[in-house]
Amino acid sequence: MEQDDDLSLIHKARLGNDEAFALLFHRHYSFLFKYLLKLTLHEETSKELAQETMMKCYTHLSSFKGEGKFSTWMISIASRLYIDSIRKQKREQKKINLLSRQLSWNAQSKGIEWSDTFADFNQLDADVRMPILLRHYYGYTYEEIGKMLGIRTGTVKSRVHIGIQRLRKEWDS
Image (tube, rainbow, N blue to C red; front, side, top):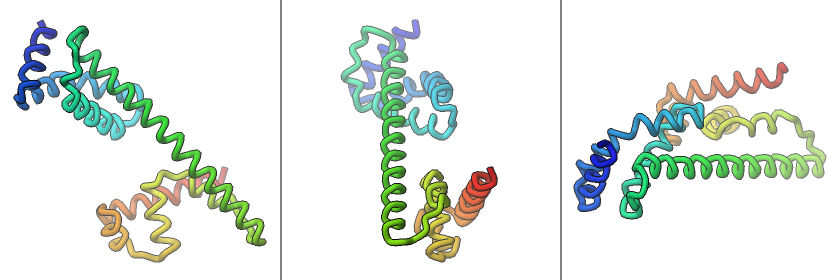
């Protein structure tokens, strides 16, 4: 029964009925989100991947052949997006590690003492690293950083605080 309802909604959505796709979206979103949450173990990442998945489903609805369930097709898209996000994270981490090694080598070749502090700093997420760098290295105010990054001043303060706590924890261990 649900399969038939999905096929009917898909047919209507292909004809340009956005309300039909919205119904399809609402019907399957919870299932999709729970699947992604089990994969990522991170609520915000799961929400982002779910939204991206549903957007892909919407834009590529014409490629759905109807040979299986819509939910199976949707989960296959979500799985590929998740794998792509993991690959992207690995590539970014490799770039950070390479840059850190290059900077360390450059500093040592110029007789500058290089500490592990910078390496630890680079292990922080970019959304935490940027406010710390802007605040403590470049001397911008929290308000200025908030405007630059398009986030609230309180968010800037909490990211700086959280980042410094993580660094201290790393240094103490």
